[in-house]
Image 1 (cartoon, each protein chain N blue to C red):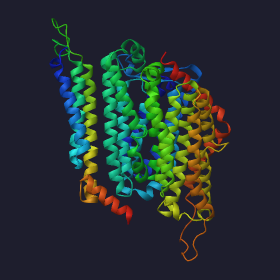
Image 2 (image 1 turned 180 degrees about the horizontal axis):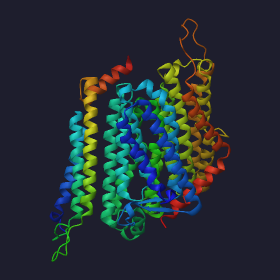
Image 3 (image 1 turned 180 degrees about the vertical axis):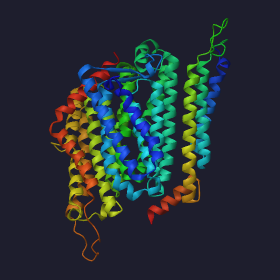
Image 4 (image 1 turned 90 degrees about the vertical axis):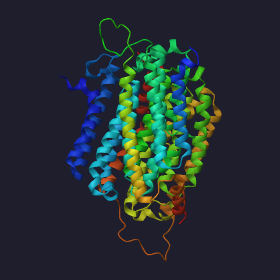
Length: 497
Length: 120
């Protein structure tokens, strides 16, 4: 048996097996090592898949040997191969980083559960991405969501519990809506296989069931990807979760939901139906614009760094959704490239905030005076990725915003382009203010110097700088990600073969 | 089909709305979970109704029974029931932890405690 042919199954099976192994091992450091090792193997498998897809085109993998419409099929093309790569890469980097931070913020007796939940969450996120079966999407969505609620509840503040519970209520409603949507689609088309479904939708379009399915799926996926006004769960969940979890979720969870959104709207329903007949952009575009204007404004007024970055995440989801609304090749490319770039930058930002939290024990903006003198590496990491978030040239943020504005201009949506620029200005304010405090504000004289303040441990700095290195690489050589994103956009617009 | 002929779907709609309403209107966290349960059950009912074929038997291959109900929704719903049970379990575990930390499971009281915390 050739292992290269089994990669689609391995990507899911490896982390899924690691979860119960963690529970059996129970030893904190061993569980961490196992999770890192599994993440590494998963990343390598995803990389192998990505190369295979680039070389030979779409991979269709029949689970258990049952052929497509009857059995469950894993369907890997450019769009989800690159998502798999992103999710497994972020999981690997953040897990490497998590060791010290988890040791400090989570009770030692529960570490094995933490890593087990992490592995299940990874399984779910990768599963949503790779599967070609609509009902399978729901199952993996629930696997990732349930383990996410658990991971958030590990936060040291007791408000993590209520944040997790509120997310559970919202998340379950969202997942149930997706389940209803899939049910109606099944009723209308008689198949659960996504490629098959895409082929049958044109004949079933006139049925009201398809219309209902479309509406339920839209609302469900909007909740899951935190599009305004359904983003309420996100701020508390990101703020009170352990910082490693926040970094992981910020880079992957909403991004995977956005990918599902893409898959359903463009490949299954088709661009013509979603945007021509259902006028999806009438609903989504105003929501996206309000997202990135209003939530960037809200971010300015947050005094807690984690909360500020959480609101900024909602704003960035707004950019991505606005890019999807253009419904052109250029727009989709911009959206997909921003999914990557924002995933990397926001994870790096949360990692640097995590370093501050590790040493200071809090993340209040106003008490970071002159932090550069005690934690120079952390501060420089925050500045580099902060500039990336704003979209300064030579960073990844510039690549995606440039593409997005270019796509908006191409379609003649000048106002959207201008509003994107305006909200970038707000980002300059909220990131700039933090940088100013960390660099220039002097510690008040009569306050005692903080004792034992030093740079974050190396095991946190190295993964963080590895991620920042990647973000700079993709910022300078933006054409690599752009060409991958363009291929992914073409695949999505082209539908199933 | 007449309106009465669709009574299964009316039950689905009624249960779904009742469940959603409980989740929104009740402050007690346990009651919210009960609402979620009702809501999810309505979806199970929707799927099962979809799979019913008029005059069909149970989906077992046998001589003389050519017409049988679609078994696929049943299988899907078995999975969804398991997911629902897991969700309820996680939610109840969270409620226990919330009760240990806050001594209350009323949403409005939790909110006022958190507000007071924020101001201090």
